[in-house]
Every structure is written in C-alpha cells, then in structure tokens.
Length: 223
Image (cartoon, rainbow, N blue to C red):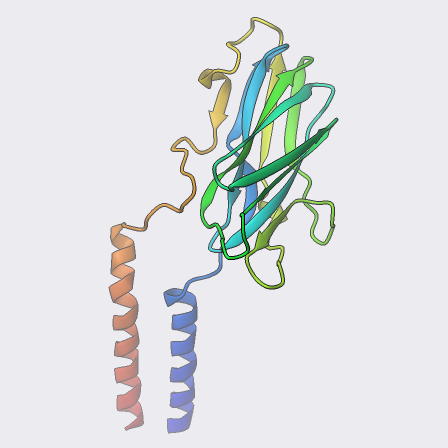
C-alpha cells in the first residue's frame, strides 16, 4: 500500500511540474497583419507578413504567399524589422519571402513583421491571401528552429489569411486606415507581451504550495 501511494505521488508531481510549471510548447506560425483590407482599382494597399515563433528560438522562415493575379498585382516587397536579412521573389499569383539571421549563433523569438507586400488593385472583386503551407513539402512555407537539425516547426493549421476587396476607383479612400482591419491593432513586434497579470503571480505561488500540501498528506499516509 505504501509503495502504491509513493508511485502515485511521484507520478502526480512529475505531471504538475511538466504541465504547470514548465508549460507547454507553443507552435510557430505565419499570419498577416490585416484580416481584411479595401483598395481601389489602380490604388495600393500594404499587407504585412507577420511571424509568431511561439515559445521557440528560430533562425529563418520561408513564406510563400498565394494571391489572385486577376484582381491584384504584387508591385513591391519591403523588408521588415524582425529578421536582419530578407530576400524575395515575385511571380504571378505566388510570391516568396525569406527572412533569416546573419549568423548561426543568432536566433529570434517572439512576433514581428518579416516583410510588407504592396499590392495594386486591378479589377473589382475579393482576393484571398493565403500561405502555401504543406508539411513535408520542400517548396512550401517553413519556420526553421535554431537547432542542429534545422527543424521545420511551422504549424500550417494556424496560418493566417487576409481578404482584400478591390473596388471601383473613388469608392473608398485608397490605402488608408478605414480601408483595412488590423488583426493586431497594438502592433506588438519582436517580443511576446510581458506576463504581469495577477493570475500569473497567483499561479507562481499556488502551484508550489499545492505540491507541498499533497506531499505532506501523502507522507502522513505512508508513515
């Protein structure tokens, strides 16, 4: 009986420390800074390619963005501030953006803008922007972890989309804030928001206290 209680106690403590104290690994994914946007025919709209590393240290990303070339023209790609080096290639209906650190000893964490794509409205309609992301496919979007194996840790299921409405000239202001709905209005970049809430502080005290309480009860049962 005593050995059984001890086994239960050890298993419970390991579970608490792994799930509550150390936390779960958060996935890395690509998103756009605007959920929706509006542009006139002949006008331009800027869409940011946003990366979230989750809880990982990363060294690079490959972002393949799909768009409708009948409705939109990708006219320019401007490097963002998240990665020090950004390269790109624009083709009709599909564009490529790569961001990477300058040396193998460096890594990036948190969130930020990899690059900003400038689209021009060509004809009336609704164009959906999406990431070409397929696990295990070479020519597909990736987020590379800073490890010896260069592990691709992207979560394709969390990849964001953006809907761009192209309207007739003069219908709406061109490339202005009313023409776009920002997905991240606070524009948080390069680092995760600090955890300063009261619930975080309570959990730091409650978890060790609960463990000590359970240990005390178990020892009384055993001894």
